[in-house]
Image (cartoon, rainbow, N blue to C red; front, top):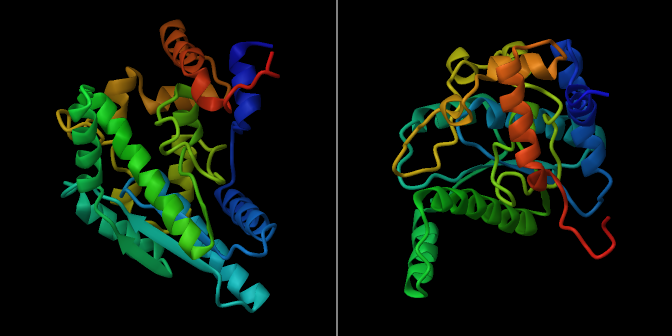
Length: 271
């Protein structure tokens, strides 16, 4: 089995999808998992204003609406969190995403003071972090807050990583990857857009250039310039198509280099 086939099988990416069916399956998945834990009644997603969190948030809201009706239980809630670092340049997109999703509860919690406080504490101990490391700290601070909210609101933290990000390791370890459940991990970027289109999402949200926007010195730097390859090519690879040798090498090198991000902590029993 080639590495490409192994990766596709591992992530469960389909060469073709029917958006309506994928939407139904994702909603069913969310409902089924949440109801495994009778003491839990909410789903929590951090909304960044990008494609993936917008799609995940909408799927969660739809799942919660169905659960409330089916279980006759008004305690089921979808909670959207805005977790900006200072003032976010694309805040309008974030608010448009919130409006599209229509969450049951919405909280805006600014992480800047917490991140700067952590950076200062490290500096006082002689540890000076780079802008890149600070960017990862932002992602981990956001996840920390999501779990605090989940503990108070009896909920699950829902991840927003898609297959194109997972294969390239384009996420922060124990940051945006540290979640309880992920309903879109089997979708590439193109497929995620098709689901949002099916859900009548505002076009500017699903056509927006993907960006992590974590580094102060490189604000709103797009993902593709960091990865050195386009999402269209990564999507083609994940759908099983033959791509040029150079692009294949970039993708597979990224995959192997970031394997540690996709595994649980090793113990003495691991071989």
